[in-house]
Image 1: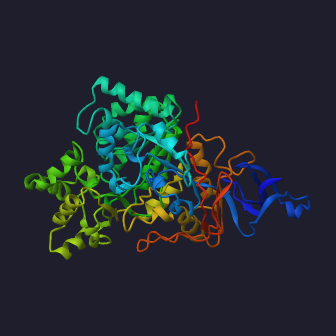
Image 2: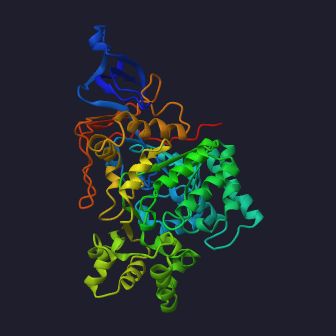
Image 3: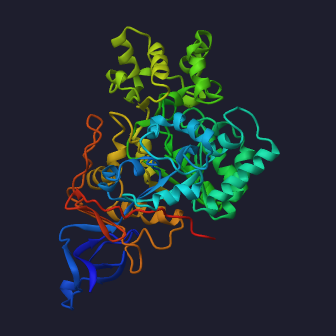
Amino acid sequence: MEDLVIRDADVVDGSGADSYRADVVVDGGRIVSIVKEAAAAGCQRPRARRELDAEGLALSPGFIDMHAHSDLALLRDPDHSAKAAQGVTLEVLGQDGLSYAPVDDRTLEEVRRAISGWNGYGDDVDLDWRSVGEYLDRLDRGVAVNAAYLVPQGTVRALVVGWEDREATPRELDRMRQLVAEGLEQGAVGLSSGLTYTPGMYAADSELTELCRVVASYGGYYCPHHRSYGAGALEAYAEMVALTREAGCPLHLAHATMNFGVNRGRAPQLLDLLDRALEEGADITLDTYPYTPGCTTLAALLPSWANEGGPERVLARLTDPATAERIRHDLEVTGSDGCHGVPVEWETIEISGVGDPALGDHVGRTVRQAAALHGETPWATARRLLVEDRLGTTILQHVGHEENVRAIMRHRAHTGGSDGILQGAKPHPRAYGTFPRYLCRYVRELGVLSLEECVARLTSRPAARLRLPDRGLVREGYRADLVLFDPETVAPGATFAEPRRLPTGIPHVLVDGRFVIENGRRTDVLAGRSVRRTPV
C-alpha cells in the first residue's frame, strides 16, 4: 500500500492547462498515480496508508523561488517557515554574484563582511566548507526545502583578482574559468553576477563573456543583476542580451524591474527588447517579485570607486572627511553607479535592519526621518550608520512602479522570485509573502494572470530553466514536491509594518513526499537537499 493519497484535489498541474479534479497518490517521494475524476466515474479509488481530503483545495507543484538569499538561513534556521509556509519547495541560492563558495579563508571572511546585511555575519553557522561541492554536501545533511546554487562571479573574482578595480590578467582569467567549471562540475546550475556590487562590477564584458562560455558548455545559465535598474536600465539589459548571445549562453534576468522616476511606464520598451531577442533565437527568462520597493544594503548605494579594495578600505574612506565629502557628492549630486546612476532621494531609503542592536531606533524610518530625529543631515546619518554598523545596514528602496510590475509579470519569459532577504528587524515582506501575494493580489483580486498561468510561472517554467527533468509538474513519476492551497483565501500575512507574518490559505506543503507544513503548521521534517545540475 502506498504512503499517501490526496483525494478530490483540484489539480493545477503547472503546465498552464485547465485544472482538473483527481486523486493523487504519493509513494517513496514521488507521484505514482493520478486518477482523474475518480469519484464521479465510480471507479475503484486508490488506497494508501494515509488519506488527505483535499476538497476545496488546489494541488500544484511546489513553488520554485528563482532568486533567494537563504544561503545561511537554511543552515541557521531548520524551521525556515519564511519560505516553507509559502509553498516554496526549491530555492535558487548564490545570487547577485556574492555567496560563500568557492572561497579560501581570506575570501570567506571578506564575503561574510561584505554581505552581512543580506545573510548576517554567519558566526552562528559552522562554515565548514570551501568549495561549491562541499557547500552542497552541507545542504544534503538535511534542510527545510530543496536548494540549487549558482556560482557567484563576484566571489570568484575576489578569490582570484581581489577587490581591486582592474582587468584580470590572462592567467587570472584562466583561473576564474577553472573555478566556474569546477563549481558546475560539482553541481551548480549556472553563474550569477552582481554588476552594481563589488568586486563583480569591475569585470569587463569580455571577462563575463568568457565565463559565460564555460557556463554554456556545461548546460548552465547566466543570471546577472545587471549594471543599472535606473538611469541606463535599458542599455544594461541590452548589454546582457548581447553578451550572452555572443557566448551562446542562456540568460536569466534577475529581479527584472524598471525602477526610479526615469523609468516610470517604460516596461514596454524592455519587453520589446526581449521579444526581439527571443524572436532571433535567444534563450531568455526572467524573474520578478510582486512588489514595488526594492531591498539591498546601504553600502550598496556607494559609488564603485568607494567600494574598491573590500570592506575595510570602504570604512577607511568613510572616516576620512575629504573622501566622505566626495562620496556624498557622487550620491546626492552626480548619481552614484551603486545607486543606478540616479541621485539618491533619502526620503525613499527606509532602514530595514541593523547589525548593531544599539542602532535599532533607526529601523523603520527613512534616512531623512532618522536624520531629522538626530538633528543631522541625511548624509551624516547615512555615513554614521555605515561606519557604526560596519556596513551591515539593510534598506528598502521605495523606487518602483506598479504599472511596470504588472507589465513585466505578464511576459512569456516571466518566473517568480522573492529576492527575499531574511535579515533585519523589518525585512522586505517579499521574503515571507511573494508567492501567496501572486496568488492573492495578481490572480484572485486583479486578474492580471489566470490561476493556471500563474502556477506555471512559479513551477514548470523555472524547472525548465533549471533543466530539472522530474520537478515542476504534477505528473506520474515526478518528485512529490507539492503544495495544497485554497484559491479563495490564500493571502500573504506579511506587510511592511509586520513583515514576518506567515501566509494564510496554504495548509499543506510536501517536500519529497513528506509534510513540511501540515494543517498550517511547520513540522520537524527536514526533507530538503541540494538539487544539482543535470549533466549535459
